[in-house]
Image (cartoon, rainbow, N blue to C red; front, side, top):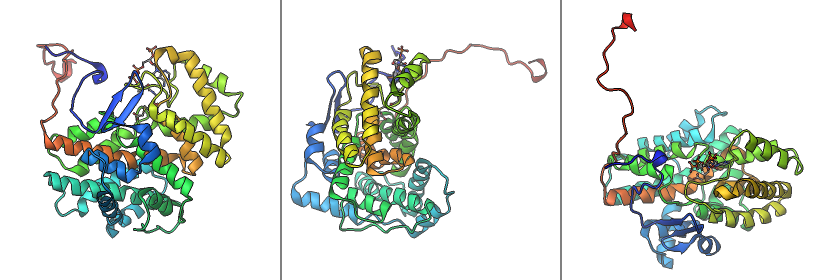
Length: 376
Ligand code: CMC
């Protein structure tokens, strides 16, 4: 008695202890803790511990995890050679996907899937993704690659490696909050992808590589870059209304709006909106914020009744732009955080695995004749 659900909508395909979403009420919790509370009080490293251990750490445990991450941030020299061999006009998401896949080549035992080995690999990948992104960005700009430092937090270290100077406290904290907000989100497309790959007992590198490929799509994590492109395309605040109305009239989608699960504002967007307002004002990007709120108002008026509201990608565009990140680094930022969720889900999958193998409803002909080439 199988039923077909296009896009697997409403299909429950895994059990997880990591994040809970109530799309009607706009609730997101990591291990029961509301996302807003974590964004206000936690750090990305602590969030990683929470997701991977399904409880908050004590001080010694948090220090130990932070130390483990910091000690793994360096890339194998040959991977740096691979990065330097890439075209400077390559897109960072393609570079990241290729480099994470290449990381497996420097692991003497890449295929191990016992839980301690999978955890080790998860830590390595999580620690090395920021170094890969920063190294490629500096290389393509013709700048020296900056070595990671072991005295900085995850967020500080990335911004340091990218810009060659330590970020201000406000920038680092803002960036850290973005990392917390993007860390996990139920069985989203890329997380499902990671679990599907893991369920074949393939390796962590393959699962994360596949997840990066999924995240890149404009209907998923790639939307934050498209939001920024849209904001860049609109010349003024007055031009917002005709621009959005024109797109809606042509039945085009407005990027950064709508969600398969949320039928109200995404709670991550609520938090990011407040944050975007502050950081945009601090960095002279107020116009972007004003254009964004105008788009939000028009969308609420035009399609709010359909349950289409801002998602996490909408205000993250203004936030990342204000932090000084280039447009094509927005989706890699999502990956840099979401790898914590992907890896946690891979380990959950390994702990109670069953191969994913859904069915397809065949809608083609039956008993068809084989027609010879000359008679087709
Ligand atoms: N702008 C305008 N109309 C929209 C939008 C949008 N962004 N999203 C959905 N709709 C309309 C759609 O046209 C359809 O209308 P109708 O019923 O009249 O044909 C209705 O809403 C339902 O759309 P759907 O495609 O069946 O909804 P879905 O659950 O398959 O799609 C989505 C979810 C996220 C793919 C979609 O909302 C979308 O394309 N949004 C824009 C891309 C985006 O911002 N993606 C990031 C998602 S959040 C972060 C992440 O998970 O990565």
